Amino acid sequence: MHIHGHDFQVLAEGQGQWDGSSITNPSNPQRRDTQMLRAAGANATNPTYIVLQYGQDNPGIWPFHCHIAWHLSAGMGIMLLERPADLAADVKIPAAIEDSCTLFQQWQTSNPTTDVDDGLRRMALTCSLAGRWSSMKNMGTSSIIIIIAGTLGTSTGTIGAASTV
Image (cartoon, rainbow, N blue to C red; front, side, top):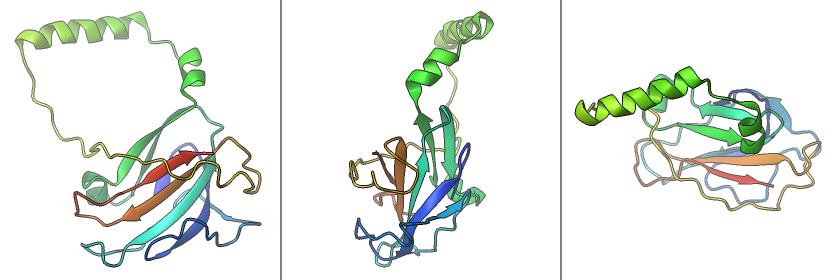
């Protein structure tokens, strides 16, 4: 798993269900930009997980995804919106772009197009870790925890959870 725009700290990884509190090395977590998620197979009988944390110090919309192309097509990718207020204050859409969008929408009303699968299917995220990690090294209150768990090939499995702390 890889996130753009950041390095992250690996808090935990393993087979089975994460217990919600075990941290591998809380005084000095491993710092990475890519972390392997172990194979779990095609069912949820032996799931795997990784627990990652990163500081939210880089406003933007950042891809978080698997580097294996067919995994991304199967849904192992999300976009993380970081500090939207800062982003909105700094980003101005040029009038030419806004005009293009308006013109396309007008054209599309009489020329309907077909949406194509871009490989980035929307995944539901659940927030369940609020307030648990304020003591993590050098992260303070502007960090985010991402839990990646579940199995590929299942439409009902949870692929991730995120919580701002």
